[in-house]
Length: 96
Image (cartoon, rainbow, N blue to C red; front, side, top):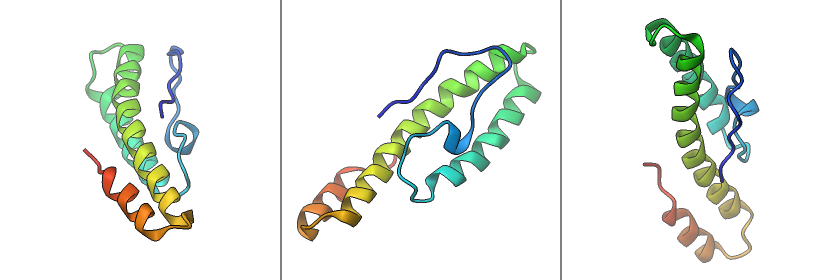
């Protein structure tokens, strides 16, 4: 489950605007983390704003993809008619 975009100079997305995942709480937490990471990337980056933003996006996309898989498995577990099957699915997806 990948959601990326072509880098636009001086612009990026954070949180729910940047992540395609079920609403199970990860999006809001990622938004707070990403806001701090983006600020740090700009403040301590290579001096070029666009390079700092693009490097931040690359890092964000990888983490967001992992959490999208985790939350999708969680949603499937919550709505599954077979609890044993749902538990097996949930155990397959772990954060890395």
